[in-house]
Amino acid sequence: MESTVPNEIRFSKPARYFDEDHQNLTLEYLLKTLKKGMVVQLNLDLNALIQMEQLTRDSTVEDLSKLGLGPLYDLLQTGLVVMTAAGVNEAKETHISKKHAAYELFCELFWKSHKTDKKATYRTPQSDSPLDQRNFWGLTDAERYFYGHFYVAMLLIQDIKKNHALTPIKQFESYLSGMISMVDRLHAFEIEIAKFAFWSPTSREIESFSPKLKQIYKDMKNNFYRKKGGKKSFAAHCMNAAMDISWLGSAAMSEEMGADIEIDGVTFKVEQWLATTDQKLHRLSKEYHHIREKDSNTKHFANYRDDEMDSYAYWREVDELSSRISRQRSIRIAKEIESEQKLYNEDPNEYRLYWRNKENLSLKKVEAAARNLEISLDGKLS
Image (cartoon, rainbow, N blue to C red; front, side):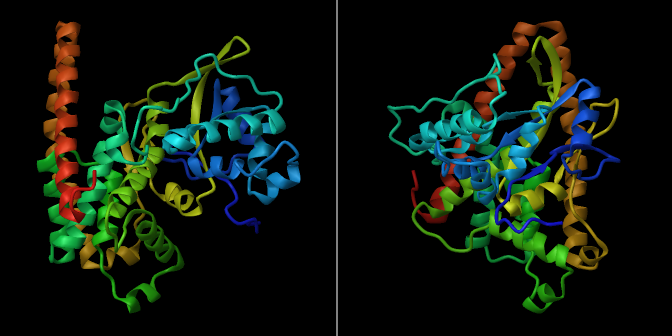
């Protein structure tokens, strides 16, 4: 039965196997995971931490339920999960301490058996930083490298919609060519966001959508595309969107890299789950997620399609175009990876130097693209 609590916390798994559907986190599931030598880690996003800020030392379990945090409390009482305040990385510089304090108070009051991981890291405010954390130019070099490609993708979508009077398919073509020429990156989820952003069904067509397609269309538009704006609003929106994209992808990446945790002297592999009170982000994470093949390093990305979407010439054409370009790029990328692996095997030191130079060049491309797109959207924004 669906909860009637607005913005109740939800959980989703960002990396699944081909034959694995979205699952609910039950006691049975947690025990089954533990038998495999794995433990579920709940990654709280910023929205969940904001709810925790409403707690006081006098708060009760009933108060938790009213805030939509009841399901989180129930999972923690099983003693079979671990948790991290990952959303602190999304917070403004001036809000970091408050988010940390809210999380620590929640743990003290409602997760009394918790122990801090020896390898836990903490994000500390940069007191000398004059810029907001949500401003791309207020990030560190490492953060701009991490968020940069997502940020440029969102800026480019906004710029094409705002400044280029093209057909929807030509707009999508412009997005693909722009990402390749500016930063030489194409990511599956941002490609899907672009497809929805440039799609222009009539109001009558939207009314005829199935409930599921109508919801996905609405969530994509509301979360990742801004119709109007001025003076930094586009940049701020794109930075928020970039953080949402990274939130959906970074947990899957951590799991693929073999993250582990030691509990009472026993080491467990970590199975990453996302925890958010943002309902539209949760709904999207159920349809758009990473897919792995068992006993293989091959990775794919799941997206939502149905016969209804396939009936539109727009979707048939953009899907064919993105698939063709992705196939062409995959051949080149595979050769690059093979060459890099060879360099690593022959000379690890030379490889590390090569990789640092590659990262520096990539960051410079991202920064140049971001500046140009910000200026194009609404004058100099930074």
